Length: 331
Image 1 (cartoon, rainbow, N blue to C red):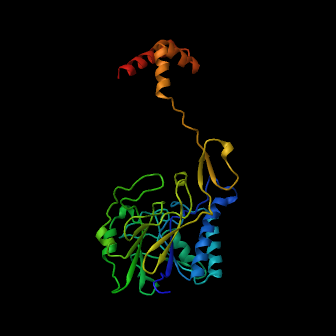
Image 2: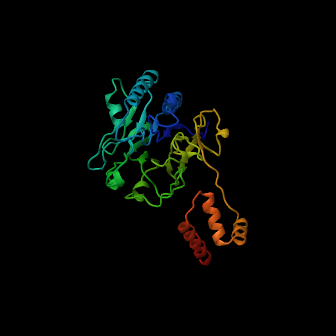
Image 3: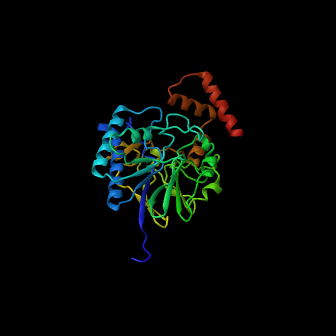
């Protein structure tokens, strides 16, 4: 149909595969991460498009659990046999790298290890400043820069890019970005060593690292995480993005995965697979009630009642509390 857009890729990031200590009976929480991979692979295979991954496939940078390594190997074998043409063009994030990474001393992490040691052809294609652009559609190419410590020499990596005349170029990064808001409400107010003019040379920039999916500019997106991974995610929808041939983006929530939910009592916990945290309700004293208490009771009587309530009988502490009450009144 004239004017219709064509899907060219599925973008996702920050999966953080891990053998979690909490909410992980029978490794259900761990396996949800592989269910995300199954869904992405299924969509890509059906639509005959690749996936773009913006870093942090794993959670622990310093080590990789043997069980998790086995799960990953099994998943790669399975998806390779089932969907031999499926490809994930990926970069490594800070959680994937077990050594400090710099442009002059690029390190390979856990994702590279799985990509290179698979007995069959791996669906994971690692991108980096030392690899050429990967063609994902007619005249549309993608380049990736892995997480670089403090973005040191990121400008140098981007400066050396050889653009293809007349083509569209997509850049994958794993970094903070000024103005990005995380799921805990934190707003990135600056980002070290990022040269905005260098980014403007690309037609589309896709970032991983911050877990809240969001658009940051006309052509810059923070991909976010595909599912809840921590309590601060509780008010945020997670998912993946569809990338079209005009380089427009569409966010698709993944609502089938468990969410973190705060409740005030155990009675509110449901057996629905979500991750519940019981939070004690805040108790506040109304100003007029507080005023009436201090008005009706002398400082000494108020101090006595408080210490009695606490089960404390100590004349010195009583005198000290009276002094504190008097001092606070004069403030």
